[in-house]
Image (cartoon, rainbow, N blue to C red; front, side):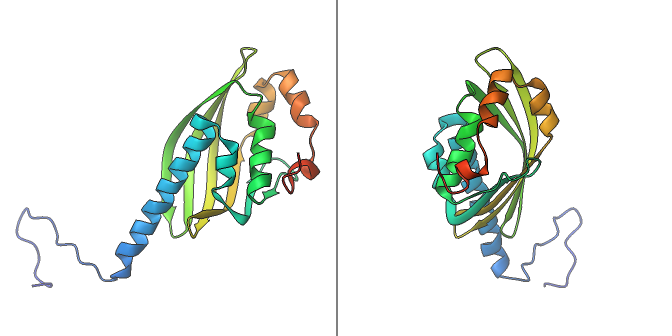
Length: 173
């Protein structure tokens, strides 16, 4: 039966050669669901304490185009996000693609930042995240820093320049 071709017009029978594949796929789906909830906490609820709870104790967030931007641990990640996000009046967020392979989830998305002074900045991102035991172990954001710096208001730029890696390296704010 397994070696017979399907009848004309019938779909080819799906064979599972690795029974663990089903569990692997469900973990990938679980990882994507976790990150969908994570994005909702960041951009809908703006609950940065909740965002920090998604991270492993040694989880790392890195803004790749910004030197010395790594934050390690839930509190530091929450503080790092607060520095840039809290002064922004509101966000819109659109996920274009989310793909998972093993413990890695890649998300192509656009964050649109709306400042109370009228400026609007659409920032395309690719986020690469590693999930282990339902916790984020690594989050690396890839984006064009010039897009933000050329369109953000001067007061916001002055605000973020007040901070250094020491301010968020261990959740110190």
